[in-house]
Amino acid sequence: MSHSVDTAAVVAAITETLGRPQAFIPLHEPQFVGNEWNYVKDCLDTGWVSSVGKYVDRFEADVAEFCGVKHAVAVVNGTAALHVSLLLCDVQPGDEVLAPALTFIATANAIQYCHAVPHLVDVEETTLGLSPSALDAYLAEIVEVKDGSCWNRQTGRRIAAVIPMHTFGCPVDMDAMLAVAEKYCFAVVEDAAESLGSYYKGTHTGNFGRVAAMSFNGNKIMTTGGGGMVLTNDSALAKRAKHMTTTAKVPHRWEFAHDMVGFNYRMPNINAALGCAQLERVSQSVTEKRALFAVYQVAFAKIDGVSLFAEPENCKSNYWLNALLLDAPDLTVRDAILAATNDAGLMTRPAWSLMHHMAPYQDCPRMDLSVSENLLQRLINIPSSPQLLDGSHA
Ligand SMILES: *Cc1c(COP(=O)(O)O)cnc(C)c1O
Image (cartoon, rainbow, N blue to C red; front, side, top):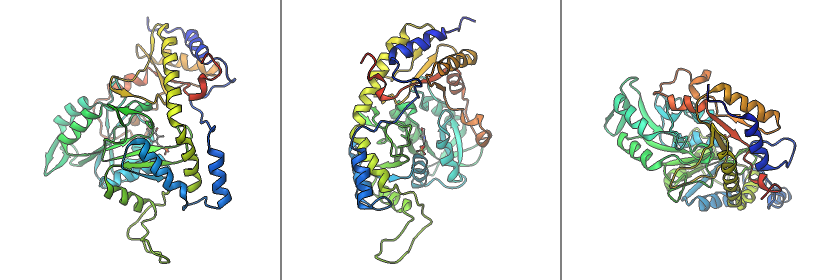
């Protein structure tokens, strides 16, 4: 077949872009070159390492300011942030929640933690995120809006929410997404785990849904070791998020009284200290990531059969992970490139397994997922650490 791609040229394009800073080049590596030591040491020196301390409040305020969102509530990880976000949107046991088939499994897991059912939606090639137009056409066939709620006529279940996920930092088409959610009367929860520093039409991701979830896992654009954040512009929801994630304890000087089954999801102070330092440099990281994208784009323009995924108009991606796309779906070619690059010490990997390809979610309700299936056979993530251009030809 004429799909073949020169795998040696792909290896050369990456190596020429990066130089050879080290023998093995991971997909994404954290960088600790700012105030991390100072702030973490301060936690140890003062003894404030755990559930109380000034860095949690500061980190929440700093993230809210950076994202231009009214409220941010720090939690233990991005999955917990998603779980709480869905509960804040009143997702009930037995409800369905729409989510992309192409995502990290945490998106679907958070739905399952609510005893709700993930209902899988296809993505679009322009953003790699959920396709509002395909979803609209699909829902027109299968749902009924009644008394301000959306009902799946095939399963009899309520569709309570949708989770657009900003894939590799590229924003979903949120205007169209919000229009669909309004038309069919369900809540929008953004999975902004990968999109700190990404903007849709000039507004930071995480501002569009009723609630949004962010992750600061070790592989994300900035890290707190492990951590997450619930974002919202709704003050009542923010208050509830704080309450739910701090064991629902009623404030009192000595009583232990809790008014609901809450969660111990609060971010420890020592992790927040790391976060404060990381956030001080996140704009710099985004600038470096975008510079790396631009150099890669030139390098791959010369190679037949592949191109580098680029943000659509009106969007600014953080380019958390760069993605190569084969012109044609071909697992043999994809796997040959994965083998050649990894053999050469360049870490690459395919997209996540699609949700319905994995045991826990194989029986989920779903629409036609042909774009997701197609992209799975074409997509390869390549090394994307912000510091990679240092010391090469930068
Ligand atoms: C990383 C990630 C999460 C989960 O975040 P954790 O902090 O690892 O729990 C959720 N969704 C997506 C899309 C992610 O990439």
